[in-house]
Amino acid sequence: MCGIAGIVSQSANVNQELFDALTMLQHRGQDAAGIITNDEDRLYLRKENGLVRDVFNKDEHMQQLRGPMGVGHVRYPTAGCSTSAEAQPFYTNMPFGISLSHNGNLTNAEELKQELFLQDRRHLNTESDSEVLLNVFAHELMQRNALRLSPEDIFAAVSGVHHRCRGAYACVAMITGYGVVGFRDPFGIRPVVYGFRETANGRDYMIASESVALNALGYEMLGDILPGEAVYITHDGKLHKRQCAANPIYSPCIFEHVYLARPDSVIDNIYVYKARLRMGIKLAEKILREWPDHDIDVVIPIPDTSRVAGAELAARLGVNYREGFIKNRYIGRTFIMPGQAQRKKSVRQKLNPVGIEFKGKNVLLVDDSIVRGTTSQEIIQMARDSGARKVYFASASPPVRYPNVYGIDMPTTVELVAHGRSNEQLEQLLGADRLIYQDLPDLIEAVRQGNKNITRFDTSVFTGEYVTQDISSEYLSQLELFRSDAAKQKRTRSAQTVIELKNA
Image (cartoon, rainbow, N blue to C red; front, side, top):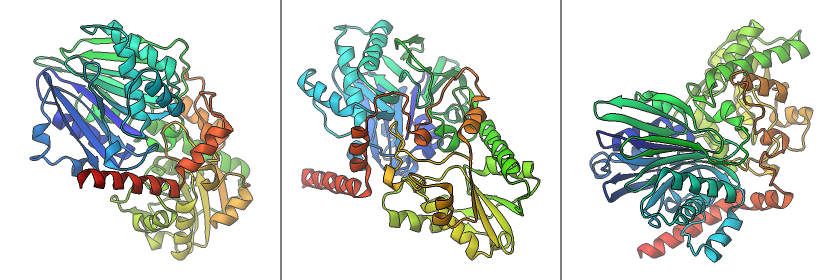
């Protein structure tokens, strides 16, 4: 999971606005950040591990990022390793000079690496599938043999990407001296939107992962880039768009609405806030249907993403809603953190209970999902330690039983607490007096109500059914070997050794 942004301005340098856009998308990636800008025939790049505010020093870095056009990226690593060598945007000079930021994951990256080396004669510098995607796009663009690029050339290259690449990709690419292009895989798994802002010198355009980045900078949203569609904005502010896929099928990731996206975003023409309200309603209806004589005294959300659903759930049940946990905002998202010991420690650092809200009460804790179970187990124990008489736990989504292969760094199957376990086993393992999961049809209806034109979602983390239909048991086995905590730590150590040798 990552955040991407691209801006074409008619009047000013885009460095500060890209910084601001990435800050609005910081929830999508906290490991690394990068910006590349284009001023006539020159490129200026800064990328490094860390939060946006730490990577870009105003005097040292921001002033050097000159030019009215650029792209940016914030990253959680789902492939490769977590060193700065794989921070984005990535760049290749052939043809024309292309810089690319990518959110998603290619499921045929290994096959494409071989093709790029043996057939296309292109060499890769990292293990990142995003660099693979960049080089596929660059090769397809070079096949046009154009001395001057036209929108037709760019759309043909995107069609070539769709033909060769499988998996999830929402991308923004800058072609030096020409413009910025945004495109999305034929299933539309990961989100990307675009909009404009009128200025005295013409229209500025922005492409970003979520609408909050546009809103914060005064851009009017034009819409989502549709599955298989490409949007090309020339350096002089002309907008071109085209459907570049032969058979697009709208299948966005439903977990964006459960957890990833900000509640004030609109993605795929669905208000995330409203979708989460409806999740709370559906959960309340299930509790009233299956447990009409419940003895819940208070509903307490696990901040932040479960607050909206939790408040509506409490209202529908007719019980008190209270903020029982205070969040330390300087601790990142725990299910993505490497190492079980670090995750457990981070839960206690991240959340501190307000004891008076628990003492002597039957408490219903509400979270957006249960992934590894580390957070849930620790929080349930924290509630008991704070004096709760009984601790019930509700998840706004169904049991997460399968890994995500489309750009969310979820753990391997064996690390998913719900995989292979019944509800009763999970209650005992997590330490809850009662565990309530959202039913999948209810979750789908809660989200789909915002856009009836979407006939299906990617719900693979709940069902194991992958919309691209190319995920084999062998692929998942390799993914488990690649994603384990030990494998990640080994890759990071290896990459750090290479960097140290280069700097020696």
